[in-house]
Length: 171
Image (cartoon, rainbow, N blue to C red; front, side, top):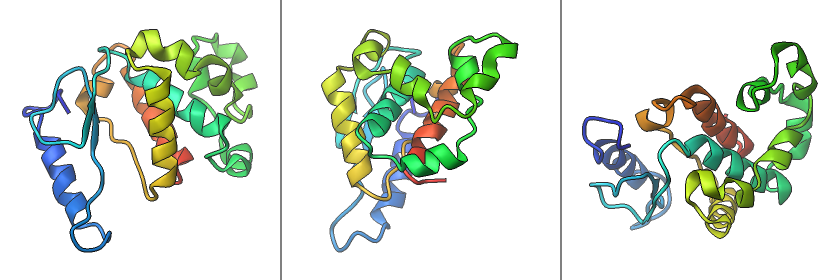
């Protein structure tokens, strides 16, 4: 949310929306902010990330969701046509077709939390905890604000955020 005019604006909107969620009296959605900057709004947890690390972070979440069978693998195998891999992995145009029906195997091979920690500054234990929490808390989603798409890898990062939401069943 730090890329917006007010870094707390999007978080306050999210909190207001979650307060109305049907979770029973006095309950609300848990709000975790992953950002290089401490948010101005009150959140349940702040996890600092290195600038430009959002895509690697989202792909490491996807890695854990797939690895630990927290996503519906039958759905992935049947419906995922993966056009993101070639862009993220810088595969030449003519070779990208081999990834399109891979069942996201490239995410499992290339983006384990141990491998992305240097790009994100987030420990593997935190990534694994968040992926498991997201899978348990249904419905759950992650939100990418302006800062996600403003880096040089912004489009791929935004698509990785959408992929995680699809793996969580939020399409």
